Amino acid sequence: MSVLSQQNSCATATAGNADVSSVCGNGNNVKSRSLRTTGKNKIFAIRRQLIEGSYDIDGRLSIAIDRLFKDLAI
Image (cartoon, rainbow, N blue to C red; front, side, top):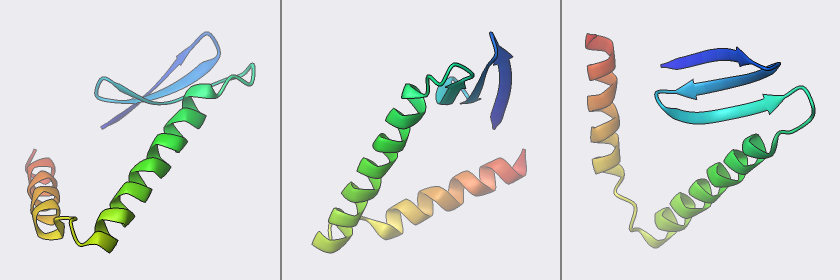
């Protein structure tokens, strides 16, 4: 679930307790840039695992489907 709050003219979107984006009116978007880099690193790691054949697609899909059904049941 995503929550949008305004503080000191900065928009901060959070999912649960994790900060997923912070962009301030003064041009300070270091957190946002850092999160994009982290996301790219995760994508590269998953691509590498897919190429190596070590990525557990069935297990990951099962977890994602379970989470989806849990979210829909609420």
